[in-house]
Image (cartoon, rainbow, N blue to C red):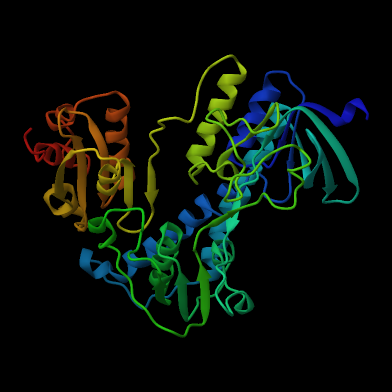
Length: 428
């Protein structure tokens, strides 16, 4: 094998953690390559996180225009032009791809476009997109191949050729009636967006509640409806790891019972000098977690001892109002046998919400029963993600809840509500 086909770091997949590992390794002077089948930068800038939030914002604008009279505005007839919605999103994606290509050039990491498959330990055969084949080896290998939307085994569903989030975000037309199968984060976000664009939308959730990971009081807020017929079907019923058929067994990389790559808490696989990053490793399915996976691997390569244990992982659902949570939910605390004190505050009590007429929702905090540590925070309301970050910072710093209760918080802001929330914590 020629020297040109051997790399000090070889990354399969260019998602969030993988590309950061490649860029940083290349900048440090090590010969590095990334094999990517199609999406430069991975799914986040191309088909998932950022494109969905782009179209969700267009839907927010549509909603504001439709309700402009509430704010004293006089408008005429309004309609959604999905071709322009799609063009705005595509313009953003094109710009993000250009930024990624600039990063590859600046870092010195080689980007190889093609479909990769392991043929031996730390050896990947690549069917190049522009024709031909290359065989690459790496002294170290990172696998960052992500997941794809799961199509449930429902009779007739596959034959109906349902949309996934990828196809839904490429529509240049407005579905007359969109049935969404799955009441999780993706389903609820896109259901609301298309309802605001003008589609009739029905959510079908087989579980006992929408947003199944949340407490019942949170899930009760975005309730949906049921029906039978529709013009389009969107499947948002979970994810499947992209681990089948790529020769992982030839690489000595083991899978867990659910098809994810089995890793330890340092993200090391069963094969020496091979790591897995992000969703394919069973990490929580968020871009910010994949980026944290990169930091764990990078620091450990430099002699550190970072792990995935006890990570404080925040997440948001970008409905309107949005939902954000960090730390324990009430159900989590109950399962773990942790006794907590619970405080709640309606968003209506936060004066900023009255200035914007966004008064729906509430804040909820969990504080340990025998101390003052904040164990969890949930918010369903305007600016939930930003307010959550304040609480997360306090949790990371080990600040007692009284620190936020007694803080001077700017008025009128949504974060100001944290003072009132934590003032509602029951006494010990």
